[in-house]
Amino acid sequence: MDTLVSMRVFCLVAELKSFAAAAQRLRISPAMASKHVMQLEKRLGTRLLNRTSRRVSLSESGALYFEQASQMLDSLDEVEAAVSNATVVPRGTLRLTAPVWMANTIFAGVLADYQARYPEVRLDVDLSGRMVNLVEEGFDLALRATGAPDEALIARHITNVPFYLVAAPAYIKRAGRPATFADLSGQALLHYALYPGESFSFQGEHGTETIKLDSVLRSANERLLQMAALAGMGLAFLPKWLVAEDIAGGRLEHLMPGQVIFEAKLLAVYPSRKYLSAKVRTFIDFIATDKRMK
Image (cartoon, rainbow, N blue to C red; front, top):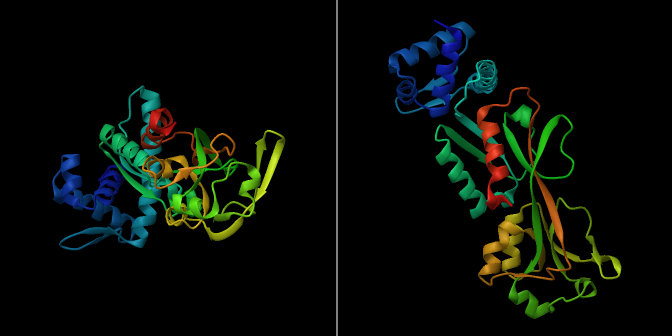
């Protein structure tokens, strides 16, 4: 059997977790799909898939082989397309990691529209908030709000994300509505743990203004900070996308909008590869041009 064909069959079975579904997609019989995988396992001398009567899952060796083989097949498809001037249809599983605050209705809508346009792409999205190693953990792409991506990675600027200073009406009633930078000093802060220090500098009417807040809660999870702000615990700097609905609904207020201005660059970051897979390339292009991301 052709090893390359067997690799493609194995990768599709692994993605769909089904011999029958993979066979239908490839227009071969389930028995032939199983034969391809067994031949690959025999050649490698290890079990790649765990099979039961109800499900198919990757073995430890299979997970390692799938990660490397799927990347190799993506690159091969891109090379062949470049040589033949053909268009590669995006397919397979796109493993994406992004900040916790990307769990919002705007980004969910973007994901839905992308998948509707490219139905052969499956999205596997990690929003744990941890800084993953893209290469070692097998991620295709990361969305990161940072100005200093890893030099070993390629970064493309997607958009600037405004961060708003927000508080619940209950907190404002208790602590007073700040109108000047001096009013902010000493107020309760829901502190984003990845931001060093408790002092913040902004350009005011009289030059640079520095304020120091009192951190009453510290967390790297923006969702928790949002919930604490809604509970009236203190002030928080949170992404516009995360709090836009709360502001519109009156649950949070955007404070000092003309004075406290902060934006983060959202970057699409991916491993350096000469031939970028169609699923990664189309996803980056899609989010970079979607008006909702602006």
